Image (tube, rainbow, N blue to C red; front, side, top):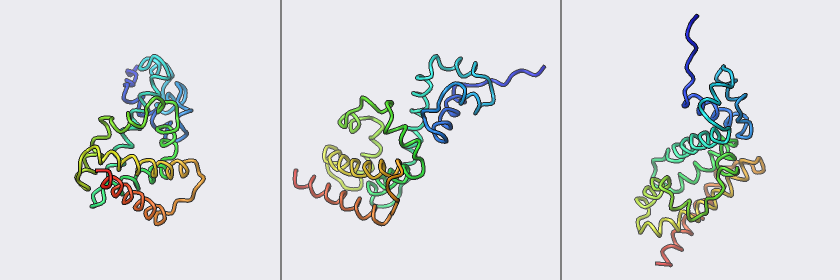
Length: 187
């Protein structure tokens, strides 16, 4: 009899991520993940003591995927590109967007905690290189642009607004320029 295939923790996380991406984070359970892996539920529960632990690991995987997606920029207006990518992510990956920003797994983080998170430093550094100024000033600009982009993205992810890149780009540019001007006035 051939040996059974070994199911690794990484494979379980990837399968849970796929379930969240395809059908929503609410559908992550031992059965759906095992189906993705083509195995029984035993290996899934061996790797994770609870489904909540599995969902937390899937959330981390989704967050890493989101960060990589956001940072796919290269033009001179880095923050504008990141903002547009944030909104595009909501359009292209609405289930992951809802998992990341509209589930209990995002709970507990205040806006200040979000801005001070280590994971945000690549975004803030890219912004600082683009606009100059202090990191505190860049954080102020980021908050304005983030809240604006998050509003658009949330509406789009929940199927309530048609995506019109030209309109969104124009409005996001206005928010970005206004935030830069306001940050300059405060210093």
